[in-house]
Amino acid sequence: MLSVGLFAKKGDKVPGYVILNGGEKVEGKVQIGSITDNETKVIFFKGDSNKKTVYKPKQIESYGFEEMEIDEIGRTVKRWVHFDRHKVDYPPKIFASTTVFLEREEQGIITLYTYYVEIRDNPKKPYKYFYYLLNEEGDLEKVEREDFVNTAKKYFKDYSALKLRVGKKDFEYRNLDRMVRDYNYWTVQQHDPDTYKVAMKE
Image 1 (cartoon, rainbow, N blue to C red):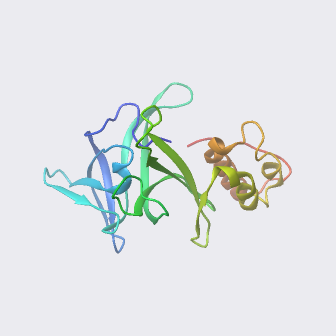
Image 2: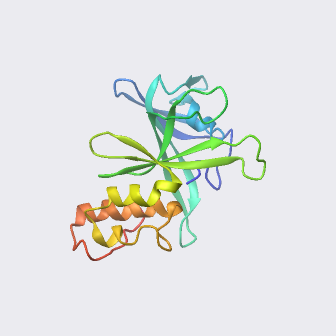
């Protein structure tokens, strides 16, 4: 969920790309920022150049970078982290814009984004996170914790085995990424909607 991996740290340059307004993809290196820096700007080095360009969300459509992480069975694997430009209701930090880069967690019929906001007066928990859901029509909806069950059941209504589990143990707000992954898996596989199957994480 966090957009800074186990081995990558703030300031590291890692393989990455930007998608310019208009759709052109440019490859190079991305300098990793803090959790909220990654949402407000991207420091990019085109190709093998040492000349940096700082892009704000209004200047590019999306970007991504590659990092290393430990998977569920303890292997070191490469993972791409992708960010897309969206408009949100609250800036990630003081004086920042509400046009931000949201981290794309899952993609399919439903796309899930994670969004971090700085909590300035809580050093023990300096960030709060929210989920956003994007449907096929391009509508983006913030998922509030208190409305999570109703919102999730609305999105998963066709997949009864999942809808019935929403709000129960292991199907809570923090598990929404897995639920979206399983729902998208069901929309592709089209197995019996009353039978719950877990999608393998890619």
